[in-house]
Amino acid sequence: MSLPDLALPLVKKLSPEAAHSATISGLKLGIGLPKISPDRWGIPVELPKSGLHLANPVGLAAGFDKNADVHSAMARFGFGFLECGTVTPKPQPGNPKPRLFRLTEDDGVINRMGFNNHGLDYFVRRLRRAPPRPDCPVGANVGANKTSDDFIADYETGIAAVYPYGSYLTINISSPNTPGLRGLQGKAALQELLTRCGAACSAARADAGAEKPAFLKIAPDLDDAALADIVDTVRGEGAWLSGLIVSNTTLDRPASLRSAHASESGGLSGAPLMEKSTRVLKDVASELFGDFDLIGCGGISSGADAYAKIRAGAHAVQLYSALSIHGPGLVAKVNADLAERLHADGFSSVAEAAGADLPSRA
View (cartoon, rainbow, N blue to C red):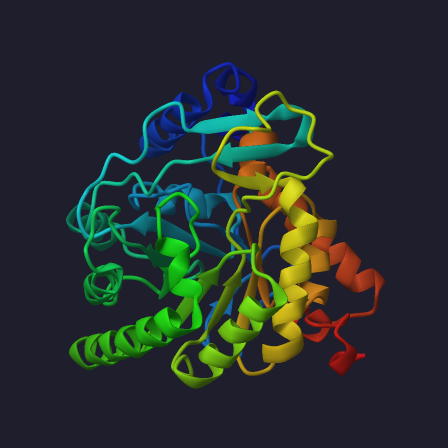
């Protein structure tokens, strides 16, 4: 067991944000970290649209390593890929504290962090100093400053800055904690965003002399009409995208929540998000599977959860909130359990299982 896993009971005695800060500080020291090879479970996957080769399909979602401080350390826990950010052009402190809450009884988390980060200059310096490991791609998740007069311009700035250094980039328009940001998921706004960001990626590609995959991260709180608009717009103006990440946190509060913090404002993640995010993933996959790479995110805390996302149409998955509950040793457990489930059902690869529950794949 690694030192971070052993320290988990002590870390949990701190407030959630203090615990996260202590974890980042400990990871920077690099003491007591494991050296788990990401290919040890024999479940590699190549994302067909983006061409990303992953030693395993389990990635770290954005939000944990906001400033690209510890991606080299986190790669040692067996992740197949990592995503840093969300980063905004200018540094910003985020929303007032307290803004992070454990829902212990529900295995969930509520956050209203508000894209707190050190800004693009710091973020890019960190990526340049610690380049991605060949066996663990590192993505860069970009967002917009809260006070920006032009959110899309912030994404253009972010794309230009991170493009040369990340293995891929993610355009995050789905955080519920920046007022107005989710409005970019509306059809007209999304058309403009994808047109302008597509041009920014094209320019960055020409400057870098290399093509990098790009993903769009969407919210789970979309009705059928809004989801249909996103699908149609992505097929049109978003043809340059490699894929979508489904999904971010939810503003919903299921009636099953028992924690005293359940009424806090912000985005809900962890186990209570699993069912909803997987349902939205399956809806998106029913329309876009085969044309875009899909990454399932939201509520994963076991191999069974990861397997459910894959069968619903995900080519790979991401987790974060469950690490604060179960510790980083969870990564190895999820991969091992997922490998067993694939084998038990007769699948020779992750790619073969992807979308198995979709009518078009049955």
